[in-house]
Amino acid sequence: MEKTEKKTTQMEHYDYKDVLRLRAHMNAHSRMHSRKRTEHSAREQRVFAQAVKRARFMALVPYVSE
View 1 (cartoon, rainbow, N blue to C red):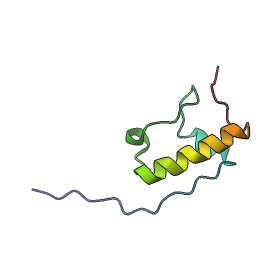
View 2: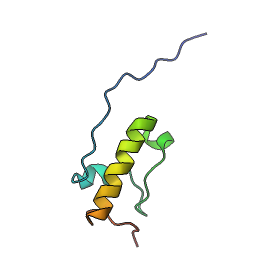
View 3: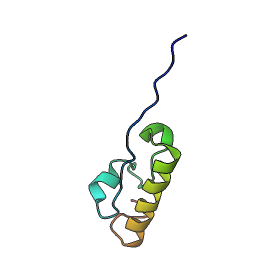
View 4: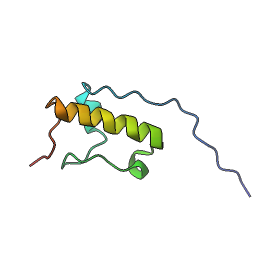
């Protein structure tokens, strides 16, 4: 049996003002992609979600896209 390698990457920092980077992990309807699709850990996904929520509150990213 082969052992699978764990990812040992550093956690990415998501700034709520960096709209292009946030939009890269969102679909056309302004919904966040799942952890499976973005390959984030649980902690990274929580940090990303918080950044998206802050950007939505500041009206940098829409809550729902038409």
